[in-house]
Image (cartoon, rainbow, N blue to C red; front, side, top):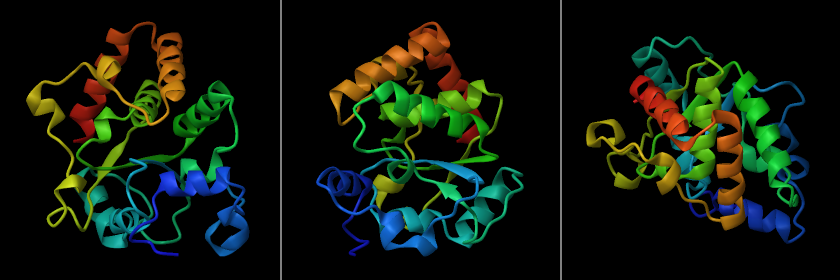
Length: 205
């Protein structure tokens, strides 16, 4: 297992090809209890990159910066979508509903800062669901951000960028279409969604 190279996109492709689920290969890394935190992140990030955000020191820095009270050690139970959403399912709406339930109800929501985080459709959907539920999100910085510019969060608010709905991207086009449908159903309009995202960003960045 090369953590320097494997990303969530690779895990998804592995599962689609019939590979055994990681929960069977690494049962010690999984729990049957409810998650304490839901994670929002770009699937291009490798396992090594993701770990660089979730060290005790990075979580403590995040909690201190935002006056956020949360357990900051490796026992924190984190929900990671690629591992808990059925990657073989073709029912995108069902996957969105499952995801929405987790991001709405989890005690905490952690977002891993990266340069194009706020262009990704699934990430924006997760942010908006959380904010609409009246719950906070916090942005976590990577230990590697100074050496890897792609792990720094773009200055979305400073640039005045606000057309998230129209400019969002997804690896799978059908995902993008279904996410936009779900956003309109949930938020009423693309403008309402864009406003929701901007308000959230003002709080977490």
